[in-house]
Image (tube, rainbow, N blue to C red):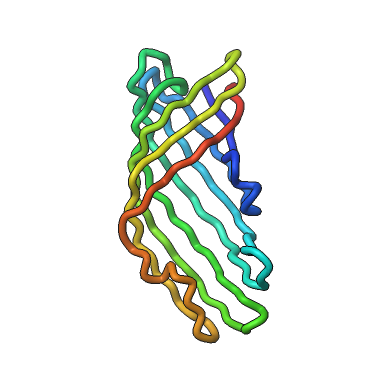
Length: 157
């Protein structure tokens, strides 16, 4: 079985997310996800743009065959983002590498529609480099623990 899905709330952040999951057997699957963002917060001229990729292994704990049921999912994420503020003529780039383990549940309805909900701790290593100005996005020193959570919707085929 395969699944194609997107994050439910990503459009509100002007971010396109696409994930593909492939069941390897009844208990395991592999998922690869990617995103592209062009987010502009509030009424500012600041813009955050870039991409990320998240490979993920899933081990299903329930009696249902993958990709349905409760699962544990160790994963890694790489992000490369650019921060620009045209008003102040400041810019910089952010590279981030994160490790996480999620617990989640994926429900499949009518053998076609799925809803995937997950939550888990993460640890991130970030590097921020200024190109111009004295831009401080507040994430340059945000190495350490965080939380990954989300809801995705999609189809099974």
